[in-house]
Length: 144
Length: 401
Image 1 (cartoon, one colour):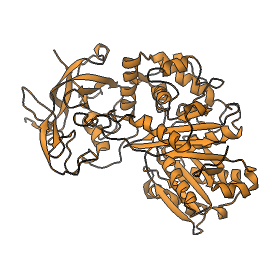
Image 2 (cartoon, each protein chain N blue to C red):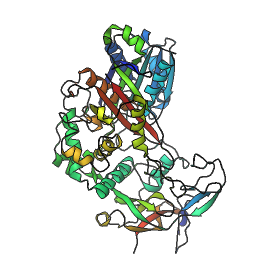
Image 3 (cartoon, one colour):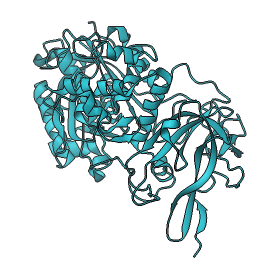
Image 4 (cartoon, chains in turn cyan, green):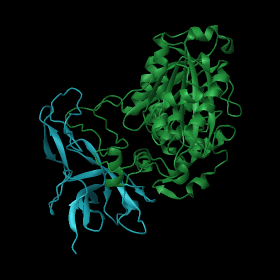
């Protein structure tokens, strides 16, 4: 049976095969961007607007910092493999938005080849699979 | 030192030793409270207010810590509060008690926090809760607490040239400081090799770079300055709390903070002059009217070895990028210019969340009284604690004598 591909969370990213992007919010009052999306309150303390529109964030950024997880995190994390394989997590600076966003890096990323400032791009990849579904999430990948 | 308008006295302090004892957290809190009462030379009957720091991993009694400890010590009609501010809970409870005293609602308050911790990584509260960022960061990223500590550590390496040897040196220093502390969980010398050769948890951090989770309890008895002056035990010269800073970040917050997925955006509004962790200490200095140059010691939250280096800069001991030099020069070791974590810090204690910020104040008190046997900072007159709780809770307590 073919598994149904589903996002691990609704509405946080688009899944266009060629150019996936994170989806944040833009405040219609003050223009402040937020990720995850602001839905009820603008984070700008001077703004009382409560209406927001979706905005796709830059698909490329630069590494602010990075690490790996060498031990399996506790639930609700679901390990995609048994035995558990360490994976890299990156904090990525998006210049236009003035925002740093976390994400896993794609499997096979060599942490020793990373350095702050390195260009990365957004992809959508498998987070984990269960009996019926393949759960997808955004990840970062070193830009070619 | 003359009284500031907002000073309160630390009449007594007490702790239940940190460890992995596996008993109910209430036992640790009551033991710490009784120690603090004895240290203050008063009885439970003298306490008008109890400020409890909550634990969220021990069921309902943990959520209502003020009442739980009051009942355990024996109901007597005192007023209570219970508060949770993650790692900053203890300092926030101190601040609540301080406000009650300064407002004249009570003369004497007990502040108490205790925890019994599970083994391994801290995990989010159970259940399926996809609207909670603390749940989601585990689910979508597998981002544990050490993940965030490691991102900060790597950032220091990339930005300032910090090395794993520097991080290991923090652990070596703090382990040495903690050797003589009867309340510390780990009282054993650690070498740089021990740290470097321990398993990698989240690169660049090794197991011994990261603090453990512990059981423990801590309590302080606070009073008005007037009460302290009438009270024989303090001989008219008690340790005073000169400031408590419980600030939140200011928008836009530009450093990724646990458990968030992203920072605020700086596209529309420029970042504030002081980042969050700088603002925590700055708030305390401003309130106390003294600065980092007046400090004799500091107790900072070394959740990881690298985080201790960040704090040197955040509390103004040196400029950004200079923490490694301060450490290498021995300035922050006992006997140095400004010892940091003479208690042994979280490196020697492990973290007992609601008790930890209170324990930091216990250490300042012993140091300022000259009672920190085996780890005394000679002639200590002023000290600061610094800590940051998940979800934007600042915590710094400044004590003087």
